[in-house]
Length: 206
Image (cartoon, rainbow, N blue to C red; front, side, top):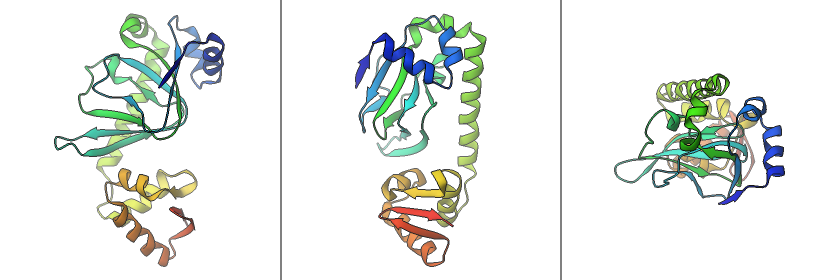
């Protein structure tokens, strides 16, 4: 992890952000954070409460169960918010976010700027949209099709860019199955003509 305080770099990222109008009007101390693949972006062991906006790269959000196993909750790409719930509620002691690739975030301290954030209507509107989207995603996740084959097809149709699954191990984590189970399903639906294999671990829904 690397924190960047260069004002030029920060201003450039804010100007390119989807939320630049709101961010530019906030009188708070921004900085950038760079993460390498596999680094924790947010976790229960971190002492500092940060609000972070993904500006480059992607991450995985997962739950640590009582037995120590990981359960995929969501994934985030450019414009994704981390820390939106921490503004209002105590931090969860079991949810982590991990960089799925090199990641750059705009960041600032929640505790230092909480009063300003809560008094800014435009910022709160962004938070409401973010939390509504996450609740909607959880609702859809709770209503997933029963069979693994149906889940794989739905995942490729609605969650994969260009309906193309890239990386069996990563997809298996999100689908809550083993890579071997997912590979069997992919082989079966490829034979049935439902998907086309484009390369190693890469399949496109037809």
